[in-house]
Amino acid sequence: MMEGIAMNDDRLLMTDHSRRAFSLFEMLIVLAIIGLLAALVAPRLAGVFIGGQLKQTKAQIQLLSGAVAKFQLDMLRYPTIEEGLSVLLEKPSDAEEKWEGPYLERRTLPVDGWGNAFVYRGDEQFGYAIVSLGADGREGGEGNDADLDNRS
Image (tube, rainbow, N blue to C red):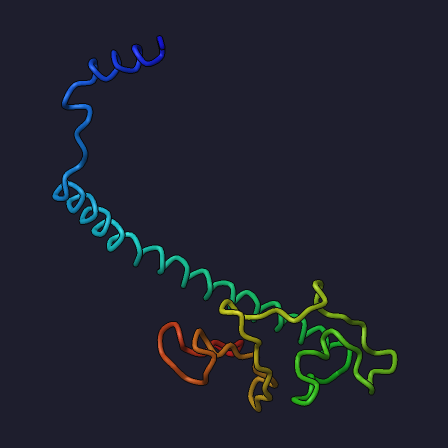
């Protein structure tokens, strides 16, 4: 019985101002401000994320290039197109005692910044090419979709 009286007393103490809710207009203003902030911040965050993917891809290409160079020193040849980059992890059939791999610490082939496998190709001038096909995973492209390789 006493609790009911106390609750009634609390209701009497509440002012009309404390019961007031946000108006629709105030809510729209808050949403507009949040939208403007998101529009200003999102492109900058996307730029940081894209820059990180490019840096990661370039670092992985350098890592693979170093592993191919070690392979070439041991085997006196570059990996063949058929062997691809997997020969950096698994001993080729013609290796005899020359192969001193695996040539990658993780014992797995790295992927580019977009999660795609690298493409290994022969190159007459450089000897080989390690290529990332960019964000779209297809040859060619511009900007974020552009191909990256160890020759540039």
